[in-house]
Length: 468
Image 1 (cartoon, rainbow, N blue to C red):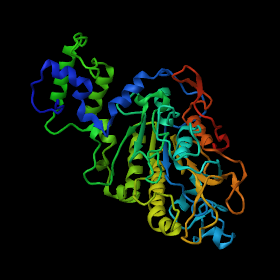
Image 2 (spheres, one colour; image 1 turned 135 degrees about the horizontal axis):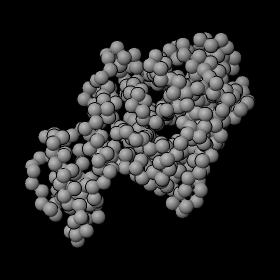
Image 3 (cartoon, rainbow, N blue to C red; image 1 turned 180 degrees about the vertical axis):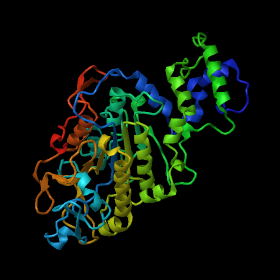
Image 4 (cartoon, one colour; image 1 turned 180 degrees about the horizontal axis):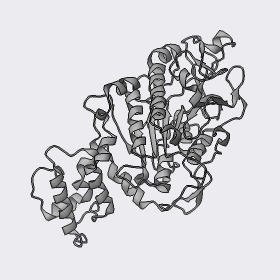
């Protein structure tokens, strides 16, 4: 077995050839995925010359995915006049926009509703976590809808960030799409990891760059931007020269299938490692203690702070998934109110409010679209036996802000029990179309799949009336 670390200067020719280029950059790997591949797929994009073609003004998008399905009644669409078994235990409070009330457990966000467009008419008919994640994050129905048994596959539609990598590859040292702090999965779902978070039929080379781990951990770092122990930049340059010297000889029968030639993507790898801007973008130690405290010293808050830093570094799409909390996320089948009040809503309120304040103060909110959503909502009627709410895709809420979104408004409405839309029904695909529009990409743009068929990038329609 070849040791791909930086210790020891002696490599046999056969060892180097077997190791291949990616072995020479083993310190860049991150959980089996790497920053290098994120940049390589940008270079391979066939639409590299694509230019903005809509009135969208977003330079970056932050998707705050509240994995598990938050209750619409207990967050953004309270029904204070409904019977107790519908309205639940929480009161509603006034916001800084007259006539718009939200849950009492979003007190910080209540001060920022003038920046928000609250969509209260989200709807679809899929009660399964996994296939619904695919719908939300790709803008298309899953190959097998209403299923919690289908893991990710090459038949899936590409994740929005993967499509962006094809259409608008980032020219700097950072990837086009970053996802953190994990790839969502559900322990109760036979399929495990949710589809729709990968390159799908575009191929694994278009997967987002996954930042896996807790940014709130004092020892947190992004391994893809770290050199292995004992490795130096000079040694990285030596490896580069070694691979360049071997070019022209890689047609030897000794070469394994993993060996490749030196190419611009490997230049990108070295650039990423030595780039101060790439390292700084992921370095939360550059933030003041006061700023970190304002976001909250918890994984969700620190992920949102990291998202803000990536916006400043011009990363087009950052996805912050609700973390693996070991307690079923926002999937509150039992003790809904206890979990919302004590575990879920406080960090969600603190982190989102701090992000809005921070982006606005830095002059970035007008060019950054924020989308806060789950994959579905919860049943209007509380389960009496355990105070839970079950899956309910027929009506739920999402929130958008920034990038020209007119704040202080609600879009659509629900009926008296938040069970069905009363006006302007909105699908997850419409949210993806709105994201593409905000980034200057026509939602009906077509790309070619592996069978050379024209495929529309989103099945939805953008919510144009949200924009000022």
